[in-house]
Length: 119
Length: 114
Image 1 (cartoon, each protein chain N blue to C red):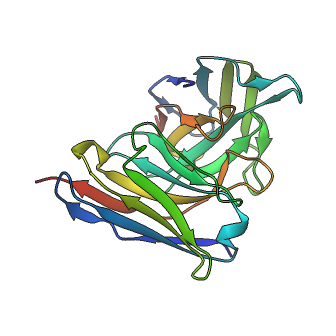
Image 2: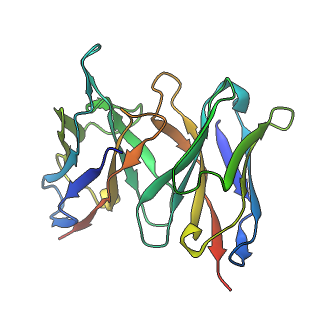
Image 3: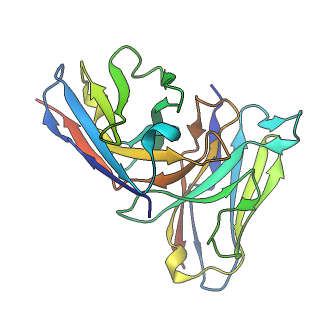
């Protein structure tokens, strides 16, 4: 069974940093494309970043240069390093696995971890 | 960026009745080389993560009830729930993946019971 469990969220001051983790089970992170998608309170879904099986990474313009996606193959874990955080980064961050045969579609989602950026 | 819009923002439908949600993309998401529309639909129930319902505009994900159907092509798409059930109360999002990796979602449509 595919499972994605996020951790690392919390309250952080503007300008601060946070690292989110996503522990995966039931599949191999390095063999799939993995994404982070966020949802501000009461708002819609916003794609944040993706890492492909080959290691290529991509970012939404809103986080480029501040966020870094990575993975630890030995731990089967996905990460999102978030620096220079802003109030508008406040959201639930979902870890997600892409559909095997349909690049761009998300077939599995974690339960999410809440990041609050506030002084 | 491809901008996705949805209508209506919300709707209330009686149990057993049809619910129809529209989604429009700012440019075509039909890829001419394979004649596929790069459009997906997700369902998000309160307090839960989204769940994939449909991809390629009309292909149901495994396990999704057949009362859910998708249609449309190019820039205009529709998600239909043929006979609304109580468990279908949720927010529904369309998503384009034509411009992968830069995918974008619609703003969502909330479906309630009348």
